[in-house]
Length: 417
Ligand SMILES: [Zn+2]
Image (cartoon, rainbow, N blue to C red; front, side, top):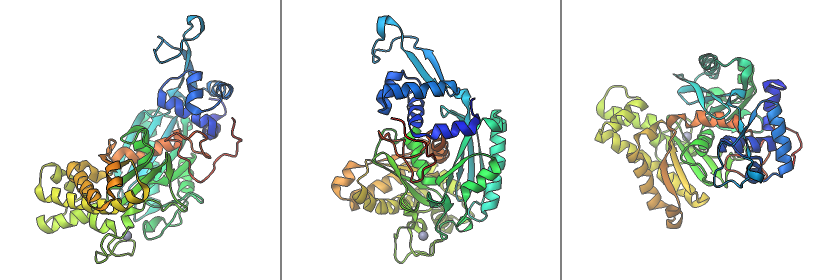
C-alpha cells in the first residue's frame, strides 16, 4: 500500500477522493461514468482519482460479468470496467464510549465488521481508565480480526458529551465531569498510535443509522439516543449539525419539569431526570424492590411486565414533549429512536408519537415519521467507523447525506474539480 496507512488516510480525507470512495462504498461497484454522475465530478477528475486509488491498492478494477439493464451499453459490446474498494486494503477502528460501557469494532473499508467487543466500564467517573480500557479492547479486536496495527487507517470515536470540533476537546463540565477539557482525540491517538477523530456519541448514532440503518437516504433526521443519558444527533439538509461548540442535540438537558429532580448537570427537571434509563429503573425499584439496571427494565418490558412497559411509555411521552418543540423548529422527516432503551420498542415509540401528536404543530407532526433504529446499541460504533471511512474534510460540493461536513478541516489539499 503506497505511502503507508498514514499517507493513505490523509489521501482518503482529501475531499474529492472521499467522494469517490464514498460512492464506491455505497454502490459496491461502479463504472467511472457512474462515479462521475454520483459525485458530480468531471470524468477526467474521476479518472485521475481512480487511477491514484488503484495505484495505492485501495480500489480494484474488474470487468462487469453481465450487462445490467440500467447501465449504458459500452461501445462494441465491450463490458464496462467496474471499480470497487479492495476490502483487503485496510481496516478502520471504531470506539463508542457510553456513560457506562465501551464498545470497540474493527471493519474493512467496505464497512464489514471483522471483530467487535463490548465491556461495562464506568466511563463517567474516570476518563483515564475508560481510555485505557478502550485501548486494550482495540488491541484485542485487532488481534481477533488478525489485523496488524499498521493495517489500520484510522479510528473514529464517540463520546457521550459535547465535543468542541474547533479544539477536539470535551466541553461542558457538568455533562461529563471526568472528561472536561480533555483532548480526547490526542489522548487516544497516543495510546493507539493512530489518527483519531472524536465526535459526540448521538451524532455518530445519527451517522450510523444514516449510513447503514433506518435513516438511509433521508436528509432531515433527528436521531435520539436513549440510554443512561439522552442525546440527539441531527442530520439537517443531509449534513450532520454539531453547532458552534458541539452542544447541538443535548436534549437530555432541556427543561422538562421546573419542579423536577436535580440533574447531574446542576439544573432541575432536565429531560434526563424524567426519562433517562436510571430514572426509569429507580421508579421500578421503588415498586419492585431490589436493584434494577437498564437491561432489567428492557427485559421486564419485553416480557410483558405492565409496570415496566408503562414507565417506558411515560418516558417516551416526556421525550416526545421535548421533541415536539424540536419538530416545530426543525421540521424533520424522520425521528429515529436508538440507544439501549429503544430495544423496548412499541411502548417507547407510542409514547413519543402521542406527545408529538398532542404538542407539535399538526403540519410538522404529520410530516415526521417516528421509527425505531435498526442498528440497536451498535449505531454509535458503526457511526464511528463511518466517520473514518467517509472522511470529512471540508464541505461536499455535491451534498450527499453522508458527506456531512464538520467544522474542522483536516487537510489543506486543494479541492480538485
Ligand atoms: Zn441536566
